[in-house]
Length: 295
Image 1 (cartoon, one colour):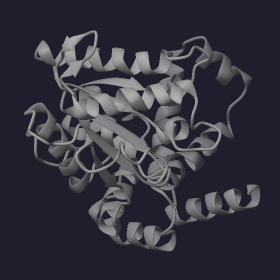
Image 2 (tube, rainbow, N blue to C red):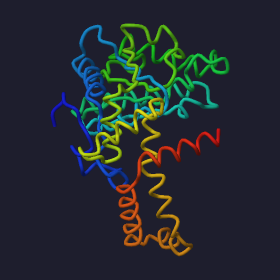
Image 3 (cartoon, rainbow, N blue to C red):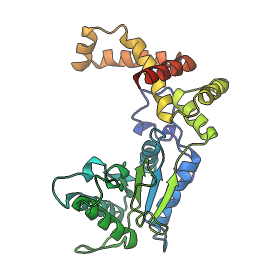
Image 4 (cartoon, one colour):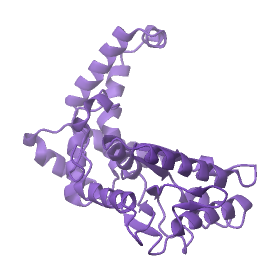
């Protein structure tokens, strides 16, 4: 596998968990790959003054977390995860200890020759500067630990020398994190908002579009320019599953729940077939109308 090139699910078919639900492979834009690779290299080489943390920030549904995790997976990196929920606890100090444990575990993996990184999802929801969060013991403890490793990534008090671990944050609000933590030298801020050509590539791969359908994808994306990637991903499956479910019965659900793999395989194939024949513009209009009526 080449470290510097754009990757897609087709590079690692054995690891593709979503292949049964998507007509084609899902592209990770080269610009996204480049930024992540740069951060990995700067940290793994322990380049002097290179920031420990990358803060991938952008509005919901643009593929930040999925693309990051998929790319790390394709590079054979073990991802040591901490979610926003993990950073909430009734026990004072526990979230900071959890972060330290994950960082140390990733460091041991690197020391043993296994690529690893620490990924903190949706960090701004719990560690952000919100009126209801700022000033709590856990909030202060998390920031204290992150500030420490950002300044001294290879030394932790009470532990000693440790291996430097590339750290990634994902989130939606670039202005919510503690300013001293995300300043230059500690954090690389990477705003992710796909450009039109990037969006076209991703949506084409999600829909499994052929070269002859390029104009159809362009019309679809241009008709809904403000919709996130998740909108197009949902329309690719929602109508197809709906078509198949129209003929489902109690026996269908019973067979699936009892582990009838043959029946489940037939249903999945029916869904794939329905996806391949989906009128994308009609499906998008239907989804947009439903979301507008529910708002």
